[in-house]
Amino acid sequence: MQALFRSFFTVSFYTLFSRILGFVRDIFIAKYLGSTVIADAFFVAFRIPNFFRRVLAEGAYSAALIPVFSGVVIDSKDDHEAADFVENTMSLLLFVTILLTIIFFFGMPYIIQILAPGFSSNQEAFDLAVHFGKIIFPYLIFISLVAHFTSIMNVHGRFAAGSLAPSILNISFILSLFILTPQLPSAGHALSYGVLIGGLFQFILMYKAVLNFYRPRIKLPKINDRLKKFFSLFGPGVIGSGVIQINIIVGTIIASFLPIGAISHIYYADRLNQLPLAIFGIAMGIVLLPSLSKAIKENSSAKIHTMQNRSLDFCLLISFPSAIGLYILSKPIIFILFERGAFLSEDTFYTAQVLSMFALGLPAYILIKVLITCYFSREDTKTPLYISIATVLLNILLSILLIQSMREMGIALATSISAWFNVFLLYFILKYRNYIALDSRLMTNSMKIIIGSAIMGLVCYFLNMSMFNQMQNHSLMANIMALLLIIIVCKIIYVGMIFMLKVLKISEIREYIQK
Image 1 (spheres, rainbow, N blue to C red):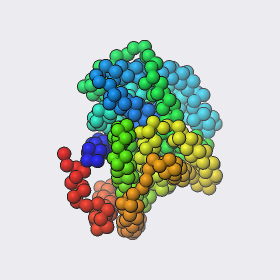
Image 2: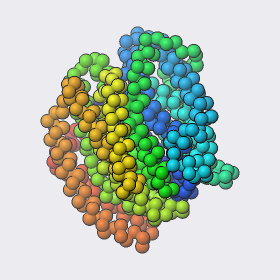
Image 3: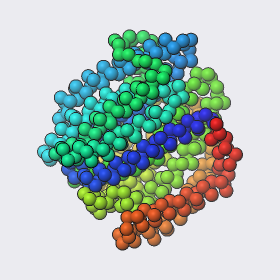
Image 4: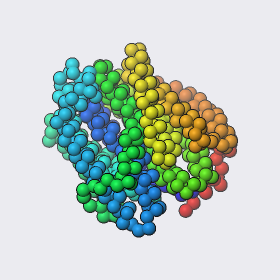
């Protein structure tokens, strides 16, 4: 478990660095674009390759490749078989993504009609989305190879490079706004080219990293038993692991019928909601999958049981206070980060409301990343697929019902409710198959975490009530300091409660971080 948590902290550190850069990037995007028609068009166009990026890098591809490749590494007596598998999968992935890029490039008008049908009544938004989409989509080739090399490195216990790669995209976004915007028709054009440039440099980073183990060459793929097994897992996993992203895309489709700005409000709120999800949920899933896969192949039931319970324990410890904090502090966070330039007070109101609704599902999003790993590590991608289909259908139904009275907030609330539905289905099926058993420590700690989070939430609520009404009258720096003070006070209270209730002990923390 010490090795697992050391790897987790490595991934979390680089992910936090990337997300900080992501906040800087979104602050500039909000300043340059706000929630204008150009912003909505760019976010729709970026949603397509970004969906593939998140599903490939954080879900289906790694879920299919890591268990199979772990078996290759464990079973093979030399590196030849492993290198052959790396080259076969890489070459096939490259050919498929190039073909997809060509198809999507010429079919982009039809893709935008599907993804944002509401744009059909706004010719400017539609034309911009199609143009941006054609520029951005070749990014899929680079990010797919990045996902491939990251999965290979993860099996070998090297997580740093893959966790650092997203930072390059954020840097490319920021630089493109400053360097390319004056040379192009709009900041949306600059950001579109920034995506492509960022993808290229992400690929270069990961290719250099994987050279420490293999020197992959492009060749005609040979369809052997290993590759067939990989595809049998990959197909269902695309939908199974991408349920959150599918729900976001469903939200984008429905939001395209709302007034201009709704898609942007969802984007900005989702970016903030993704911070704890990426740092804790995705990071835990990344490091847990190879470790749990190996434990299952070694038939170590005690290790499997411990890994699953402590991972759930840790995710609850982090997700509950994060969700409460985001829900209560949504307005000051949005106001401080984004309200300037083209981003107006009306945008702050709607984006904060959407963020609050997303926050209700934050613990569920994080738990999904752990629970779905329990399936993937057992080479089962079909069950999450069936659960995802049910979840998406529920999300569509709820979104259509709630959008009538809640606008884009209804879409966010529907996503949160369907995420909890997803969690319960994932857990009960695991329980039914005797793949998971919650121990007494997890059950006891869960109650203590809820108590500690509730007390922290009360303090946060009253501090926020006294601060937000005064924010308009103070400088940006004063508001930032006030928000940081509230967060620090709440953190101290929560950590104090956690130690007082003996959820964690100092000795345990020392064990997790010792080298």
